[in-house]
Every structure is written in C-alpha cells, then in structure tokens.
Image (cartoon, rainbow, N blue to C red; front, side):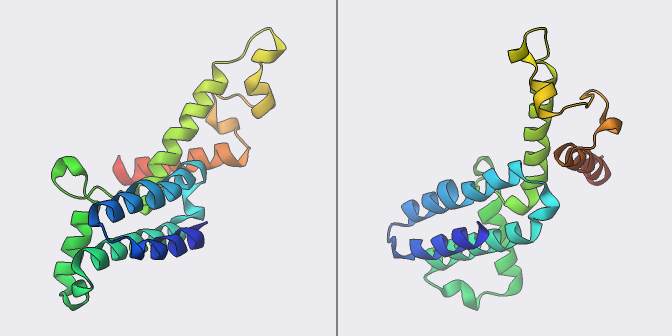
Length: 165
C-alpha cells in the first residue's frame, strides 16, 4: 500500500495548480495512509509511514519551490518540513505526519470498537456482537485478552502512557 501511495504521489507532479496539488496530496494520498494507520497496529507500519510522510513533504516542497528547496540548508529544510506538517489553525499546511499520528488513531479506533462490542450484549442472538467478534473474552478485563488486535491495543495503551503520561 505504501509503495502505491508513493507511486501515486509522483503522478501528481503534472498538476500545475499549487492549491489543487496540495489538496490532492493532503486529502487523497495522505488520507490513504491515515486510514491504514488507524486500522493496523502501529509497529507494523512505522517504517512505511515514515517513507510516505517523507515523500509527501518532498512533493510539497518540490512543487512549491520548483526544486529550489534542494539548495536549502538542513536547518531551513527541517523548518519547512515542520511548517508543512503543523495544523492549519496554527497557520501552516496541516499535512498530518502519519508516522506520528498512527498510534493514537489506532488506539482511538480500536477503543471505540471495544466499547461498541462491549455495549452490544443481550438476550437476542443478533445482539451478541462481543461473543462473535471476541469469543470467550471479557472485554472489560484487558488482562484476559489474547486476541492479537486486543493485545496490540494493550501495547498501544502502555506505549502512549509511557511516552505521554
């Protein structure tokens, strides 16, 4: 998937309108990896996410400067990369770095799934979502989770607490 996004980013070089080029990168190419990031445990993706993030930032710089960014100092290049990835409300381009946001997206989406599954128990067979999706597991007790997705959720939780308190 990452290779196809990287290939597709290069195809956008033919777009001459800078605003349209930026919007296609932001809302199409970057969003493809964001979807993958929130549905796949982060450690499996971080290397690929970084490659795609770098490719998208490079494409924005190349298109915006006509290739002039290649002559910039490392300090100026790092500053411009930051400006590309800082949110709009802070006056920047707002292209979210998927490598950095994937773990919180995965955690949030998977927590929402666990809460939804846990709240759909009941007496009727159609309501036993938790028994179908996580058979034999107590969704209120993370220590009992042995399913890979739930173990990845526990690992993400521990990592987020470690890194961000």
